[in-house]
Image (cartoon, rainbow, N blue to C red; front, side, top):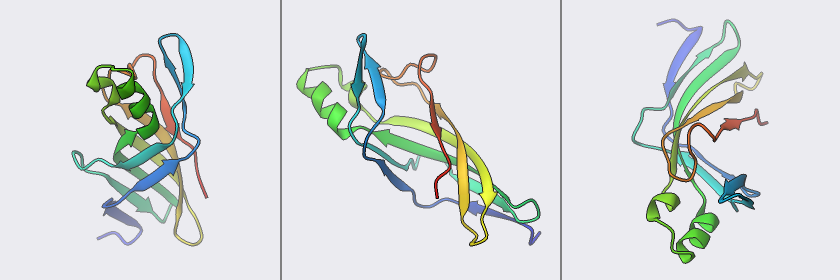
Length: 129
């Protein structure tokens, strides 16, 4: 085993974006309301810490939900496919910090979803502290 490189499996992930994100639907821009991000158990989320390079990488299979937006759309009687969770794969990289935490950032690959067409939608995660 190489002590400079440690592979890991992600077993929990939970985050909320209280202000949500902009969503364009039927020619109008709406605020999504809070966005919840959780680990999607349908894929294997894993990563690597490379202490020699002081870099970490990860691949996270996530499920994005928009509870307030889903309620509004359900009340409007839309197709239930529009309110189901969005699944995505986040591939990220960043520095290993002195306290061994990470400052990861990366791009999400959104999986097919009726409300967020792949050729018109993008998502990314900026480094946090």
